Length: 492
Ligand SMILES: Cc1ncc(C[n+]2csc(CCOP(=O)(O)OP(=O)(O)O)c2C)c(N)n1
Ligand code: SF4
Ligand SMILES: [Mg+2]
Image (cartoon, rainbow, N blue to C red; front, side, top):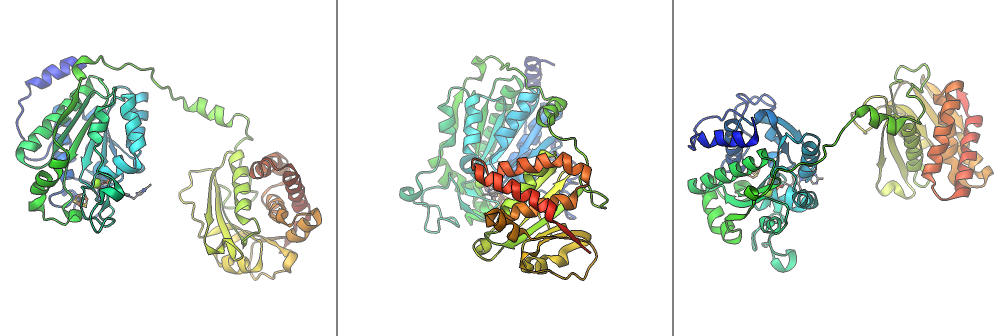
């Protein structure tokens, strides 16, 4: 059905308030953890629940469900996907309009609802939001302005009212210090691209009916591909505003509306033509070839090991020994060989003088967690690191250590490799290369003779990447890497 025919049909649908569960909600919220599967998680009096109902009613009455992608933000509505029987995407904080842009650009028939709180939209994600508005993306942004960060316990938001007390403005918002509350709708209405901007309130029945109308107008424009619509819903967060559910309507009407006047700020949808844009083409095969064409083929690099699909590595030593760069060199090598890679440094007071460590995961599969509690490779540049992490090494795991500071006796099974990394680095003329000596030892420990040839280039490029622009440093580290390969001794 064409957009225009759909609208005509919808005009025939009688505009009346419905009681009960709208069709676009699941019958039972199976995704919700716990035993309560029929209730929403919102607090009593919260505006999110009211708005969810308005959206769900409109979705089912407009027969939009099959084409709708609901973008759930970070905020109290992060779990909106428990409730709506539509496609849904959860996105990082503030990124909803950018993800919505990707969806609608690659699939212009998708109906995308970017649902956002004032912290999500007005603070961390403001640039994402305003740019999407300025590009006139065909989407609706449902902006729930409750004047506070609800989910995180009531911090000040860009829309917190002057004088309003929050966890982070305990004496009340000071306009001298924090500026005036942000009037998002007025800002968007000043742009040329958006077609429709209206501010409504989720308070009295009259206001809720107006909110319902505004939402439906925005949906109609989106179905007709007219572009960007913003509907701002003034809402209450009784929990963090420290009012009872009964006081929510009064709070919205006596506090919010005087500062954020209700009404339509822009409506040019009827005068605009439907948007037509070149459609993005996503060919996974092409992307793969572009990214990985010249890389070594993805084969398993660890010989005869039960955990060859994934290496979980802990690098540890004194602060200043280049432990974190050792981790990045291993990561660069892994990425050059098309592994999925994570690198997680442990920062802290240990950065100077104490101990330092980082975790590296190289995997043929998506990495489930970058945290390495149990490892199959332990790279230790000093004795305290061996002592600290050895209990976490899996049976049969590999240990590589620097024997310059003395041999270490191990009372366990596994492959133990030693190299005099610090001594060799001093001989090369730069003690800081000890980590590259260890890298050489690691490559020898992990790779068969044949694979070593294939991967040497990747290791060398990892060194070049890590020490960009300093030629002498690169040279010394490559020398150190090969010295590490040659000097490594297997201890059993
Ligand atoms: C990158 C990032 N920064 C900060 C947070 C913490 N955080 C979670 S929700 C939130 C603000 C939520 O406020 P709002 O968008 O107004 O939603 P509400 O809960 O009020 O509906 C913040 C700061 C986070 N999850 N991710
Ligand atoms: S904390 Fe506030 S925004 Fe979050 S569900 Fe409760 S009332 Fe709603
Ligand atoms: Mg909020």
